Structure formats: structure tokens, C-alpha cells
Amino acid sequence: MKRFGTTLVIMVIGKNKMIGYYEVVSDKPTIYQLRFAALLHELKSQTKDPAAGVINERKLIEPNEFFEYVQIKNYRSMLDEAAKWFEKIKI
Image 1 (cartoon, helix red, strand yellow):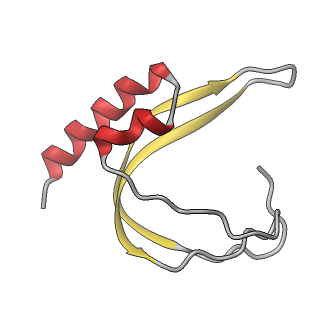
Image 2 (cartoon, rainbow, N blue to C red):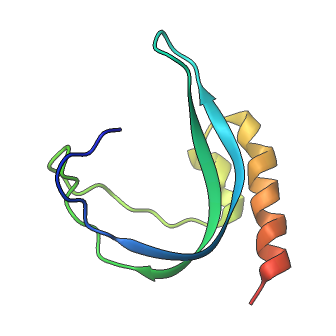
């Protein structure tokens, strides 16, 4: 996704770790989307998406609910990696 102009910061993250990547294959050149686990320090009010002009819904879920919303099976290993990382750094 390309953004033009200024995008407001709506969350501040702290410690983070790359837990994997997702390969997007289409009729365009292949791209790789990196996936991270992170601790949130601050979650600000949702703002209008400058590209679409709307305020998108934000839904915070528990880790065990993840696959109710995301139907990509090869994410399971990434979610497991994130859970291990969070357990290791538990504050």
C-alpha cells in the first residue's frame, strides 16, 4: 500500500520481533510482507485513513481468537512463535 502525505501515528510499539513473512504471489512481481510480534506502549484514537477517507474499525482480540478472523493456515507457526516470544519476555 502506498501512502501520500502525512500519516498520523496511532500506536507506539516497544520491544518487537520478526516472527515470519508472507509471500504475496499474483500476476505482479512477488512481494514479501514481514510479520512482527510487538508490545504496545500506547494505543491512540483511530484516525481517518488518508487513502480511503474513512475511519476503519479496530478490533482487539485474544490470541486464541486469531484464526476466527484470519483464514491463512500457514500463519499458525507465526502465531506460535509470537506466543513463545511473549512468554519469554513476559514483564
